[in-house]
Length: 310
Image: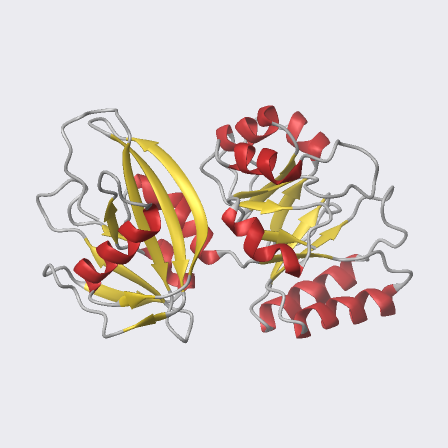
C-alpha cells in the first residue's frame, strides 16, 4: 500500500484487504525502507485512482502487489488518520475467497500470521484499528437470563458449541434474574480459555480474576474519565457524543444501536443509515445491536459493522 501524494492533509483515499487463508491466518506485507512508514508491516492494498470504485481498486491493487485474484469481499472497517505530513482514509475489506499463489510482487516480504500474533508486529499508526478488527469475531453473543447455576452453565456451554467466539455476561441485577457466583465465573472463564473463546463482562462483581474483556453500559461510559484497566474494553453507544467519548478513551470496540428494534423500550431505534453515519465517525470496530440477526450480517457489514450482537 504505497501512498505517495504531495497534497498534505487532503485525505488520500486508500483501500486495504484483510486476506485470510483456510486456517484463518491473515496476510501482511512489509513496507520498503525509505518509503512513508517504511519498514513497518501493513495490510496489502493501495490508492484509489480517479474514477475508480473502491472494490475495483482493491481487486487491482491486490493483483499488482500480491498476485492473487480476490473473489467476494466484505467491508470490515473504515479509518481516517492524520500523520504529520498527510491524511488518509482507509476503507478496509475482509477477503476469504481468492485464487492464485500469494507473493510479494514488488519485492516486499509477506507473511501469513495468526490473528493472536498480529499485535507483535509493528504497523503504521493508522492500522491499529484494522488490527483490532481483524482479531475480533463477527458475532457477539449475549447470554440470556438464567434461573439458576445449571441453566447458566448449560447456556454458556451451548454458546461455545454453537461457535461463538465472544460472549457477553451481564451482572446487572436489574436486568438479570440470576447472578453467577465467583465459583461459576471461574468455571466460565476456564471453559472459555479451553475453547479459545473471549468473555466480556458487564458490571462484574469485586475481586473477579482479570482474564476477561470489560464492557461498559451507557451509565458507566458516561461516568468514567479514563479507560479502565482490562485486556479489552468495550461500551454501548447510541449517539455521536457517546461514540466520541469512546474514541477519546481509546476503547477497543463498541456496540451501537438499537438498529432495528428495542426490546427494552429505551433509546429510539436508529435504522441502518444512522448506524452507518455514526460508525463512520470513529476509528473503532463497531457491532450492530438491537433486533439484528444472522440474516442481517451481510447488510450490517456493508453499513460499516464489524458484526452483530445477538
